Image 1 (tube, one colour):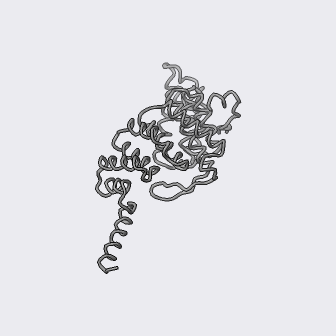
Image 2 (cartoon, rainbow, N blue to C red):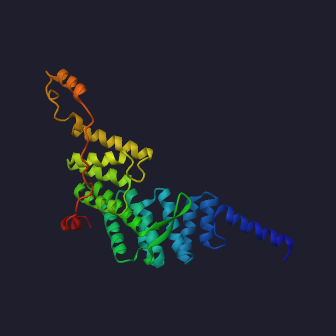
Image 3 (cartoon, helix red, strand yellow):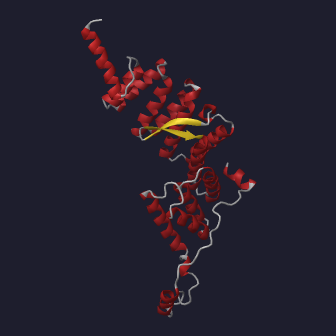
Length: 293
């Protein structure tokens, strides 16, 4: 082989590595080149269609095309594409397609469709079909490879299901699902969502206990700024519906005439009460299990 040919081959290989595009000349490669190198999403969709119709890396082509469509707000079109052509994809690709479909349902506000899909994923977990029967899968988060356990995935699916029930205004079902999720893999986001559900059911004391635990850093992610802000918002909402514990049952606070005396008594006698720690989780009845799942 001539030196010039070897050099061109190495440059071509380096190009694929730098731009993170697959090698070759097929329609899927052309699609990724248009998407990642040329920054032409509309053009990439044309090539992705050619790849799907030509049987060229259909698993990746369908998923990548749906993602590009979502970026272009062509969400309904992406949903129909997945529904129509996922039958051409391998069994291993179905889980990834479900995840893309779930994101598309969220973008379109299709809550009922989310619930159906999430319940199906829970059944797959129960039947040992998720992760292709393995207890751990390798995923990507912010460009880094991470390990995801089946327990973490189950809690995530339950958390998404609880959120969907919240969007439907079914806070009882959402509460049950969030509690299940917290039993498996607790974090601050689900704790805040659970507290929100309890507020909506006028169960203010239970909600306050949970929010206080999040504020004290007892959950994964409690130190996140967004979490802190959300806790503050929920506590403000809670206080608007129910006075804080140290303001309850203070003589004079309910009387305009005695307001000054009540405040003076509050200043002189107030001490931080020692709150009795109540269990966050209660036993979930069979009826509630059926309601939620």
